[in-house]
Length: 245
Image (cartoon, rainbow, N blue to C red; front, side, top):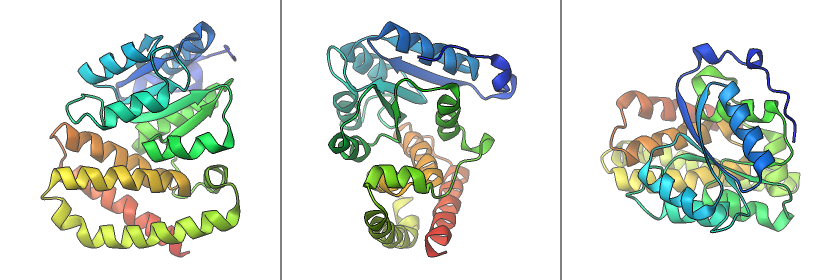
């Protein structure tokens, strides 16, 4: 696991406070992820088993969950499924990234469908962590509207990617029509955002997925603002424009 982490690689002094939970039973991985995220300005809590990860995520609010796929007490998929099904969990809508040293092709789609925004293959580098931080802080990073490489990895080939993007376009068109009504029903809005994040994961719609995750977290905490809804709507329209290009 790479360990050369320089604070100068990122302007942490100007980075908003981000709270991260790293859950991994491998000491080297824990150290790399924790040191790397701290070098990028995050406040990091480390746990080494699934049961503790679930307990902490239920009682504390994290901006980002880095969850290893295979740990004692439950891996990434089990942890996030339990959290997403528990509306009272403080981190139920937090942005989540799965980490693993090995991923079978058939395992990728269930992770994305469960709500993971990214899947990191270990060992990885600081550039990967910087990209993950971009998901948490989209206003401070260059987040792509459509990431073709991520979509091809998720779908396996270009034909499937294009077909899913056509479905995403239809979904976004309908969501745009429904937005005013959803804005008056936070539970329905949160459910739509959860399903949208899965679609975005398969289609590489990174910027929209990021805004959807942020808004879903705010809805869960009952602190969504008109500004956050407007940012989400802007990302939706920008993604629609990119899909039409």
